[in-house]
Picture 1 (tube, rainbow, N blue to C red):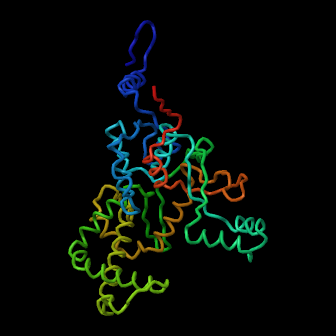
Picture 2: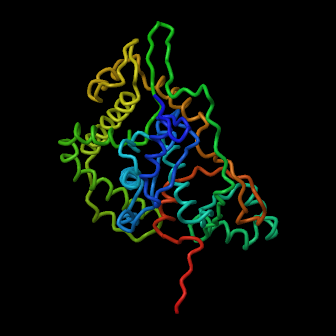
Picture 3: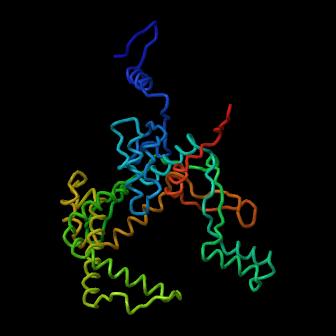
Length: 356
């Protein structure tokens, strides 16, 4: 029953929400994602800025460890204890991080690597008198070998977000001509960690067995590649791996890749032959995912359909072209490493230091 105070009726849920809000420290900001609670992230939650301790290790993050680092960092700064960022969709992770950057650091993300288009190269050719001129060829050469990296700045205040439809569905049902049905859910950002842990456990012995052989094969391939590029490499001194050993290693790699693909299907599977399997363990669903009916071709169609769903930040932006100097429509995928690197540099806009 609603409570009466000073002649006003106070809704209990509203009163509890106001009370909870007053408990949140002022250092936290409210995040309201464009997914509006219809995907995986809640409609509203709170985060604080990263501390120096939170940012330790950013410099050594690579593509493999990036998801782990992001999830570790984000989970630390979320105020609500019941919010699990591992269950967020990648688009929700991106929107959260870019909102954090815009709020705590700067409204503009500087120095993003730009990929020149064919029209950009035509512009350079026209400027320098044609594609056969030394000036144009010099630009082309420096672009290919990385000496010249055109970059642009992105004003995050101009970035649009897709509107989440009221009838949005995060699961897709598969129906085959023979009557077989199953249902897959959209991926969560933490899926890659669950799959990695599972596959590492399954292939623990094989990984140890083939670790040294893998390094030898990589060393041999690197030496051959450097030799092809013209480096003075004595290939006779490079240890050679037999074809039989390479065949064994390739079979091990193929088996591991196949296991990852089955695990991917398993972790996204939420219904199998009309049975709700969403609460089953990965091991239990893994056996179901081996069913020939759950073939990779069908799963790829599902993932392709999911990838076309427009959610989160709209990648279609307008930038100042670093080559032509004019405004240009550009498609930017909001790379998480870029914003993480910018946060690590910790260049907060508007902060001044004066000696007195």
